[in-house]
Length: 308
Image (cartoon, rainbow, N blue to C red; front, side):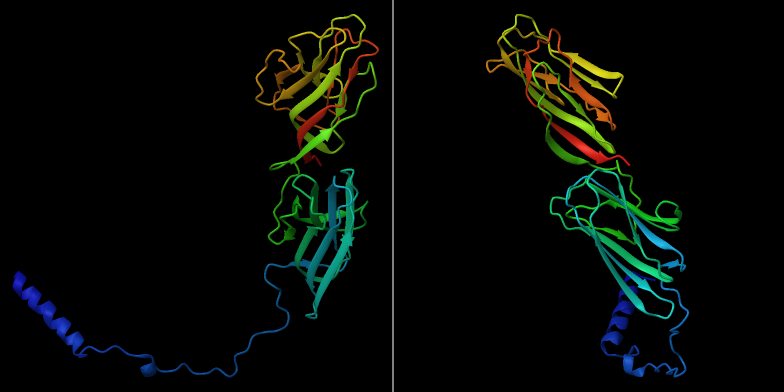
């Protein structure tokens, strides 16, 4: 077909559309669907979507590992009974702060568990301080047999713990809690020694302490030792010694470049990114330590997880 004839056909079609010669059905012209008066939705014997059906002898176990003193947890749950009754459950409890397991049992109700949510009431609750697991099972706390693990994770100021969706998280997963700790002040003639608490995991980030040599004549050399409680993992010796009647501050840090003594009697040393389990420790081991030599309390920063 020649190009001019094709354009003529297109123009004819457009003019017909403009003249309303081509009509499309509108809503008023469509036939209505018949009303089905016998149609209704079933109301009984329908399991709720996404719910967990519980038998009468099943209970909900809440296990908490917490390192924050005074932390109070709120638990709320919604359950649907077989007769269609919606039960709202609320409980408040205080776990121990020694990182050991605290278990709270939510009474069993026959029916469907729709949701569970937990939150902390202490505004200083941060990641790494309060780890919670939620499960169902039969029996007592000591003799229970678990039937399903629902969720596990940390409760913080900014995030509650809930099911569903119920993420299963391990306690040492993700970022830990940053802690700045002032350790024990040793007596004269005693070395520094700091131990990772039970059910904790530490990543050492920095250590700082002072050492004052007494007037007793001797040449001291400070050493920092990291061990698992018995076996040495890492040791570093100060590159410079310290003589009688002097005071010095020692810094150990990640990414720190080792340097010599500066004008304010401070030295810096590098520190590997150790991750230490419970019972591991760091300590000093001083060459020619005298009875009246004195270490100040160490100040150190760690990243801490609950290791449970």
